[in-house]
Amino acid sequence: MIELRTPEYRRAAFALAFGSFLVFCNLYLFQPMLPLFADSFHVSATKVNWLLAASTLGMAISLLPWALLSERFGRRPVIVVSLMMMPLVGFLSLFFSSFWGLVALRGAMGIALAGFAAVAVAYMADEFSPTALVVAVGGYISANSLGGIVGRLTGGFMSEHIGWQGAVVGMAIFTTVGALMVHALLPNQRHFKPTKSSLISQISSIVNHLQTPVLWVAMLIGGLNFALFVNIYSVTTFRLIAEPFHLPVSIASAIFVCYLAGTFSSRLSGRWANRYSPISGMYLGTVVTLLGVLVASIESEITVVLGLLIVSGGAFFTHSLAYGWVSRKATHSKAAATALYLCHYYIGGSLGGFYLIGCWEYGGWTAVTFGALTLGVLMFFLIYLLKAKHSAVLVEQNT
Image 1 (cartoon, rainbow, N blue to C red):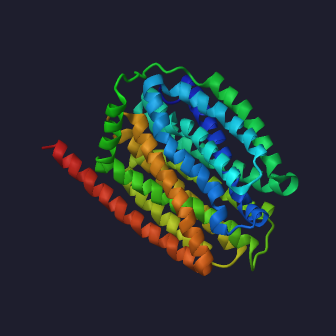
Image 2: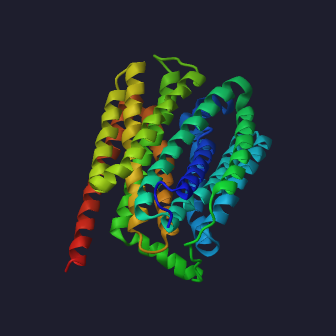
Image 3: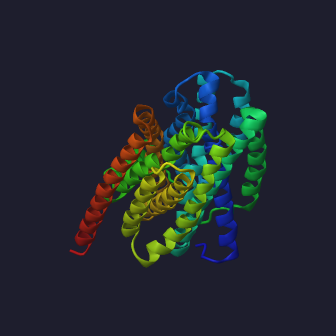
């Protein structure tokens, strides 16, 4: 097994973190451009959300097929193919000028991204020691947040100065170089054992994961957490370009720097899990997230930024713990288990966009705050349920 602080660990952890960085750069490239696309295509804020939702939904529905392929052919080949597909889809999107054509290409981008996202943590679970796995997942999630920041800033600043096509070309070139780097650095797997099971058997494993409460409830927590977190940013972009702020898109997109708080907190999550417990950390992360929502509700640029920093720190802390929980608690078909978590995660993000943007169009930021707090209450209930189910499993194992 790859042990913490060894040269092989640093090489593998960096390659996977950088691949994650590329994935999230591409996933969120269009998010800060949503107000510009709404004006350009003359569509509502809710409708233009399809440009973000298509990629997250495309990712969500493709995670399990990619995971099943990796159980047969290995994690590393799926990782490499996925990364190489991303710039290809990016270049293809330049040839689509209609709104729904662009939505379709963003869906295809989600499918390409899903391969890496579905199996990266499963690669870690196969190859890393338990202690190294917890720390590596935290670093991997940190790379998610950095990729989200860079992708959004690239989209916001470049689209305003050279158009969305220029942003897409720049990202595609960068992704091509990065994919080649990951291919060169990522070690071959030594502990992976390909499955010879049939498709029916693999589907049975997926159903088994969904019927295991200590896994499925954690997946639901991840979905609600992401529904709240990522879409607070989408709505804030619309908020900042409207009254009373009237900021240009390039400046409004700078709010995504607040993701850096998530980069920091996700690194801390592994240490928290090893010292205390993941469930107590999920409670803490949710409390922090909701505190950030309340701070952001105050009508000033400073409190909006401060609120988003707090939201990011809490949400990434919860996500890292829930994600790591599923990868550790799954006793078989780990790639399918982590893919199922991400499936819930991105479906939550997709549906949450229509929910919170709908709140914005209906009742402004007051309605958004109420909608976000409602999601937080549901998360508290699910964390309590996860604790109860886990305690019941421990009692059963000790009798």
